[in-house]
Image (cartoon, rainbow, N blue to C red; front, side, top):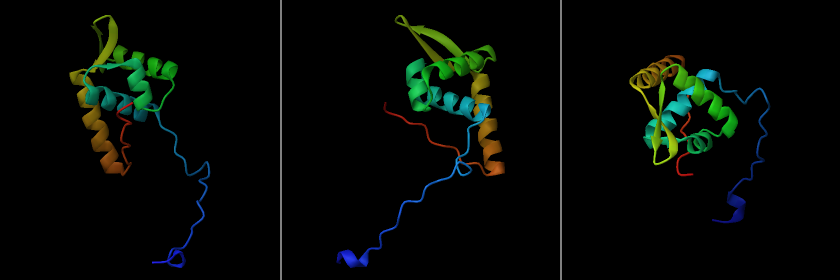
Length: 112
């Protein structure tokens, strides 16, 4: 095959309309999924895996703890979070709703 066989396509620039903003509930679901995947998860790992600044992740995790979806624990002097039974229920409902509406569920960034 030669270089003539391949057609070069210009990368298309996505407009602001094409980019969807995450709702509060999307962010909650992503945080819960990341914490569930890691088991016990510190704040910075959750923030990185959901592509959020640490201060905003801290606010959202605080709200999740207040609502009983996450539980704060101490692991050798480090504050870690784990998903509660109620958090698992939220995730299941979110997945069902996303499936009904046809919203794709993004994969969290793992391994950072």
